[in-house]
Image (cartoon, rainbow, N blue to C red; front, side, top):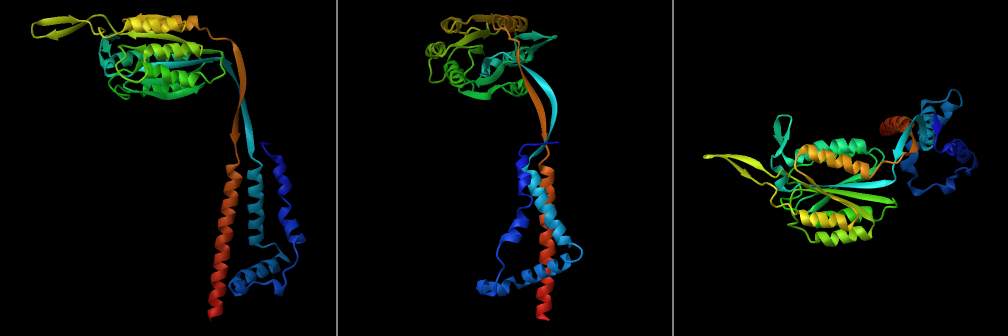
Length: 336
């Protein structure tokens, strides 16, 4: 057991010093409402009389209460195992499209078709597992952009909140410029020398107040590298009354803008037409932005201050009940 503030135990003799050093109470100093305090004085006299022989229960409760408060103030804790946390010195923001078009089921996977959002989650979960050591965050966007997870080393939390994201959560349209603008805001004030954003979308900018190219220029001025991914199959077979018809579900994808945005920041644009292509792209980005091998040593810590604090609280309740019971008996006796 260790202590955060062991100096707190110097307060243990404080009640004794107060008792010994304060001047005695004289009748001239008694206030006008003395009669209202008579039962409390009688209780104190009774307790003092008892302490001349064997210490009273009230005294023991008071001692335990003070001991519990001082012990809790000293903040006891127990140290645990030392954890080696790999650090890359890189801040990485995942920017994911949640617009309504991401519900198109054109991603074959394990004998079934996933919608684009489900496919992106499958690949991103693997990517997050490989990026242990990066501080990662998550921005979701549709008609508006939202910071779902601020930058953190807690990859498990990033994965959990990513998997909880639902289609249409941020609106049905696509605000690419706003999403990049929010990403810049969360990255530019951090001291990390390497700041990376990976944007995945299946459409063109149709909402928001920030022009995507203007946002890319701001990202470049903030030394943020932007990788953009255009997601969606080129062909999709739709059954009809006269047979199957083939359509292009990615006809709204603005590849030229995504490519220009990435190049403006020193990043790259990628086209993913299938789940496997998307996985290959994230693996390639993983090679472009390698994890460094620095580490930070962290030690688990378990706090125990709540136990002595609970003892002090129980003693306080017991003293209150004991005192209240005595006062009621004294008042009943006075009436009789």
